[in-house]
Figure 1 (cartoon, rainbow, N blue to C red):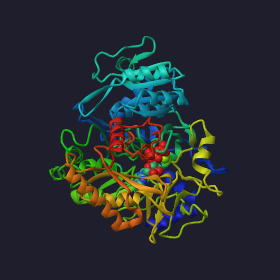
Figure 2 (figure 1 turned 90 degrees about the horizontal axis):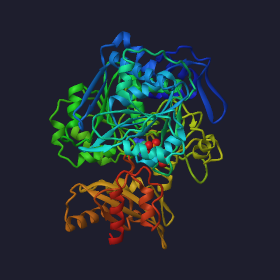
Figure 3 (figure 1 turned 60 degrees about the vertical axis):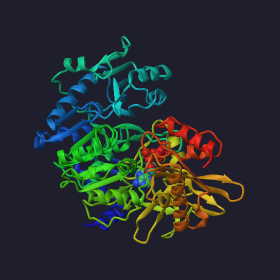
Figure 4 (figure 1 turned 30 degrees about the vertical axis):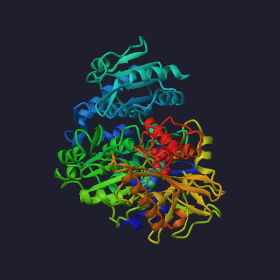
Length: 629
Ligand code: ATP
Ligand code: MG
């Protein structure tokens, strides 16, 4: 079956389609019913089925591939490389699970995990899954306030944390953040399980609350813990959205549907099967890290590479060196990371034997054509943009080389993935947009397996955030899109990012795309700013590939950008102002905070900054605005 038949079958006969896909995982008890959609838009997949994510990710592979590498956790920060076979992983996860049980953690209890990309983070997640505890991984290095919010939301029996993270050679002590978060939170976790990395020698210990994992690990050495079989729709984990548009939402994921979606996406989309190697550069704290550093590759019986460090240290060849060393077949990263590499010498990519690398998948932000073209030329590999959300847990739009390789069209993340009944809806009429017409991207429910069950403890927010935008019951996270005649979808930005210039509606993405076609530009964010005459005008914030460019070069670059936009989109889209800055404000997951840029440019308050990465970038924008373009 090719792409089209596979997709159509998933939409026309979803129960038959997903029943077949469900055979790829182990069920302790088979589902009684494939889909229960009696309470829309809530839906339950594989009702009555009993399974376990840890069993599928670890135990199931012991017999056939116990000695195969399951996980390689590489840190260019500490110089450590932990390599674990499936048997090693089984041992570590069981000991960890025994420690959790000894602390009274059990089925349905929440556990907050605050750790960088290290092997123990994976052990902790899988140990929770094994005993039916619900993990909530908080990106390591998030401020105390973020951690406090997530502690209050989850009310965990246990907080698991590392003593420190490292970034660019600088140690970031976590313990003071943890203590501050526990002070700020209304809810007090009874225990904090500390995983010492020996990075922060002098952290303070809270008697009675803080426990040392190394000691407990020794005490439980060799322990084996029985798998807790969960009903398919019980919660497996909580994970928060990036906070690009406002306060992050706590996504609740299930067990069975997620396992099935992981299994399908691994072979069909990422073209990775048992024994093959996947390297995702994400942090375990993001959706990509959960799905394609931990659960996806392990459920598939593949090898997962986990990386702690910058893409440019010790040199910009580090990722490709790892690809060579481990024989990576599929690599997964973000456009933001590639734009960082684009500022480096491409020769670094050529130094390594990448003969086993087949694909580079990129997700998380719009992938502009010039970046896609640059990396595709530099690598000589297939580059596939894929669009999804924390909410969906796996791609909504992509290509499926594991089924049938459809042509790549740069600028588009491709075609709808199985189970996603995607539509582009005209905002004004609620009607489906004709090919070539802009509209809001929606999914006709029921959402396929793998997607969120609800917002944690907040069904009302689930309905309000995703299902209340149209008179018809449709899911939308309010991205703006356009479809071409071949069914390829182009993402134009968020609906909030639409700029209305004298009645013409422009996506920020369209303007960004044309600005980034200028050779001198590294990164760009376009926003709409209120204007008395035109309603709104586009304003550009950009960084240059040459960070030390002088005034003349900056002026020339700005003139170039204006010309490029007028040339490709017409005078109506011509930016009113161009600000060249050293850095753009982003979330910790690498997304441009356009809403904050827009607020500042209009003299307002930048809003919720809990997920802001570099406060310096925002300061620079403030200064640039004060100085003028
Ligand atoms: P929040 O929902 O809290 O505002 P967020 O939407 O950035 O934050 P994520 O779930 O991390 O949280 O990101 C999903 C969003 O990222 C999508 O809705 C889309 O706007 C954007 N996105 C993801 N992948 C792509 C892609 N390949 N092309 C364009 N946009 C993408
Ligand atoms: Mg979102």
